[in-house]
Length: 604
Image (cartoon, rainbow, N blue to C red):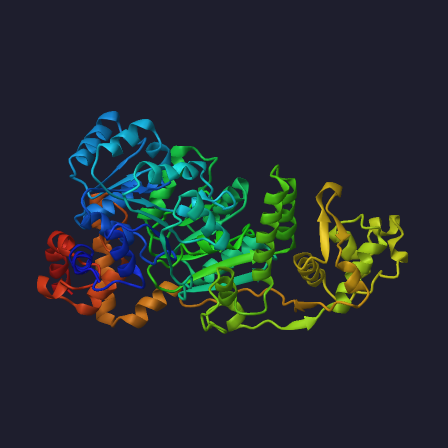
């Protein structure tokens, strides 16, 4: 291990030891090697380029797509004494000139720049004139044209290898399947880079997917039962649904803010700043929000609509529980989600190859929703992590409340037969009404009450039939024709089911239950960790941190994470010497805040 790196980790960042493969990655980059780093959100990716940039001669250039968050990233580094800056469009020309001069003179450890800015002739000529220690390409999955966060500018970042062949490059991401990983390597010319792939497991996150009945009300019940006054993110598919959901939550006493690309830039920036700087804010957003969000105490991520892929789902849910404390990933999912996502793929203007790829990703997402086995194991397996030893993780809904499977061959035959007998011309509601023997005007008009399948499924509720149809679509026995009023169609493998040559397994339908009120996840974590006196100190420290953050105009977690405050409350330091060594308290923070903390402890 590089002892100089460990010394910086302890003195600057205040952490006693490296985690996972951090030390190996840092050693490799310090010695001039290229690296591709896959590490889950909250796993400590930033240190993998921050420490090498401080140890190598010159300035480390961090390519980040997140202009709106650069200020917070630089402020967080300044708090621990790292000389960092950014160059982006929020600055005046004069401000940018000052930063450029510091870069030329080697006075900075790190500079953040957006890919669009980096690729300009002016910026490339600036880099030619500067001593560069390394290039860090953050959110490297943005290079993938098949990915959920594609940024065209990322493809052109191969210029770094061509123009600066002797400067090490480190590409980092939290989300990449095998295909995306291969694309990152090819497009960024990292064929000779060392690959460091950490476990994708986030054991503190509880995964839960519920049958959608009334999604918005189910979300409210979930928040009122488990997350009152917690920070969290709610993802919706459309801008309209974002605004309606935020309004609904506010009307029911939950502080919620909307975020989507159609909002005025000033409002969007203001809402993001409030989410980062205040406690107990729920951000309701499209997938336009979240990448690069470092807020450690997000206690839940909820999805009101089905994500397009497991990569998207994993990245979005990964924004919960960065601090390692318990967090929830909750999703409501129903038949309409499947229909809507399939239609979006079919109606897109993309080529057939892209549509086929997106359909495969959606199929994998549906399989995760419908699995009767551990969701965590399913997620890890998707990312190629099969040797985990996890069979029952004990922290997902399937493991905590195992669903029952049943032989659905007969009921699927009934469904397929009903679709066939109406000439594959009708949508879900009409077919289900036939199976249940309903006497609607439309059924009588078409004389569908005369069909042999009329009423053969009368013993099952509409919700149960919708669950069966959803699973039949997910498993490929039924398709939906969006150009013909969402009419249901048989598929190539339907015949084998109808003939009894293929058996079908499905999850047994369970009526959605209103969640019982629980101890809040975050409170439960704090209370079991601290004595009554420690809890009082922790609350005082949180209040002090909030006031200090306001004075410094930074998010509270930039001052100290909750985990550090909790360790202080446990250690009960009576002197600066006692405070030194608490995880997250480096020398700069000790000098800046140490006396205040010791004084606050003595007042308890």
